[in-house]
Image (cartoon, rainbow, N blue to C red):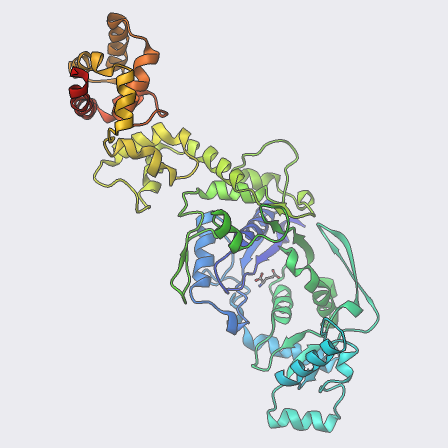
Length: 511
Ligand code: GLU
């Protein structure tokens, strides 16, 4: 199959891309790259009522941030374009007409009100679902029930109509799903879906099948929510005489809520405080901003690694995969059938692992994109702080808190002072400050050496002075090593902080 593999990621620009969508894009990307095939980005914007301004640009930016490059798409073109369905409108009508001409589709003239009335009549009769199907089509207003003359007259007069698929009455529709195996659906379960709308636009079903065919798509890899539409798509390939060209189907498992039941939604993110979008999204109507993985301090490689394992499992125990390793190891056979439970702690764990691999300079540059970045300090200094603290952070945003002592002097609270008195810090602090200030030139090695002799000469234990120094210098009990902290802060700043602490301690110490 290799070189002719063509897959597509076909989002509808109805809002921000959900991480489930990013995972679909990722699996398509991995499959394409693994087989030296091509990945297409196709924008499915046939539902003009649901279009959301900025959504397409958001999708493109998200894919770029994740490093998921595609070979053909609306912004880069390609041999099978255009890649936005709204720019392909003239193509679809002929296939809808062809389907009608071959008896696989029909005109339906029912108004919205008539459909609603029928729905209510059905509900009163005890049926909980209304389906425009083999039974219902016989009592509705369509080209199957109206005379040819009336149909012609309605069409000629410009009366509104839709084109519906004529689902055969008593057949089994079969197809093989590469993840789920053999799928068999009885046509009784299918309804006569609208293929072409009264506004002159095709529906998703028609446009999707026509485009997959015209774009020579070989594998349709998409979310499980589309599994129930696939029997109709299989029938459309058959009706249009394209069965030989029908792509393989692979439906990906759902991403489940952290509780393990139900599909993960934006509401879960709001409830538990984790992002469900790759990038920040500003709702064009309300102006409300929802932060994404990027703004919360995730690295794209961590998000990719996390999403790859959310539904796919490698053969061995390896968990950390760079993108190229995923390409190498990926296979559809190792995708789970069941839903994958979303685990934000796991996402943080991956990010922690990848943060550690980035240099202090890179982390400082990422931190600089956040509003909380400590301005007024040199990039070299911030990078040193990041390098020192990266092992303590899972997200870039955590540098705000963990890094604060390097950018703000600690506040000596009453509680802190009491603690210092317990340790009798005032007794040795003066000597320590003197020894520190005398270091010339100042270096980490010189500092280490000075510390050793200070302990030796004073007879104090490392365990009794280091925690106190950390409190005095950084204001925290847990944190980086004192030598590291002092060598980054420098002699002057450390000295200033210690002298300030000393003054605060003095009056009480003299009592
Ligand atoms: N436009 C559909 C969506 O928004 C694509 C489904 C498919 O890949 O066929 O998810």
